[in-house]
Length: 467
Image (cartoon, rainbow, N blue to C red; front, top):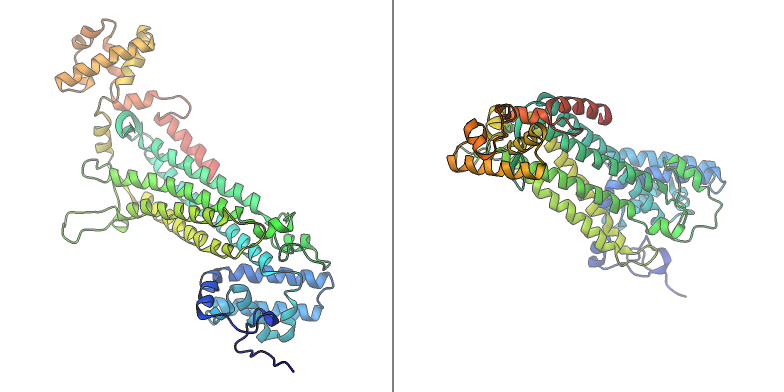
């Protein structure tokens, strides 16, 4: 007579297929509970929907179904209260929940896994988690947009230099600059919404890869979990991680936007610029130089963008060579998503705090706005508009004016009319009306331009569009 395997050594997960348990190293590399326990709420929610469907279709008795639902509610309470003990030998969140359910309700717990696999279970859990995260992140971005719009409304007429190539180009307003980021983060929110629409299909019921012979109702479970429909193909349902990649792609683009704004805050807070001052809450000092106020929060946001981009690359590389359907490689899909979500959430919160608290040095901005001959284009435009000079010719004339100002070591507005007319006699005294930085900014009234009247209207429109 063949001796039954030692249950202490055999795997309780794999049942009769394996006579011995995994090695310690295999347990360590195979277990995912340290990170996928974050899916507990989604796992229990999916199990409850699956249980209700099994009862409705007659696959599970009402008595067993009721016991399972009660047990799942108890497990949820235990986890949220910190009483639940997660076990690495049970590998993942699914088996940890199922094992505890068996302790609570007995044999009925084993019937919950009828007509499903851990493959469709984890795909469902993960989609639910990413969907919840998308919703929360869009709300956080909306909060960031709100403080940017507040600053835009307050500083609709505050002039500062606009840059190209990080060289002074033309005067713009600080409000206009803030609204540029409102648009960027608006696109980020749009990408999150688009990703949510595409991912909102339910894998539950696809089982391991081929579907099931049980008469399940996948539309019922999809509706119960807030999905629009079940995934149409069982192979795709368990092997697809596009939803995670789309989230990471959107997160990476958003992180780049945050990094660009962070870089500007770093530059603007230097002694050389002094455009803005960050509050004590988002700066640090130096251990040796008592005068220092370092924009560490902005610098850390700038750095963390690299981590989010790395998370996207990590999952792309995991997925790039996998045949259908499920492979264990896909267990490593969660950590980059979790890290990116945590990193981006923290970065958005820090940026929101910095923008809300920063102090604008309007006088310093205005002084700097006139440096570097930023109103040169206004002279060219004046020549075209008033004197009827073709723009290419006006551009050449203005270049000579700039060179003269450089030679005299003065600003354009400090040149005399005689100086200007020595270059082109068509230049009249009225040209001085366009040489001030505030007048320059105010003249940019084309749609999307930096004129204060435009900025005030654009801020109101953005508030209506985004908040």
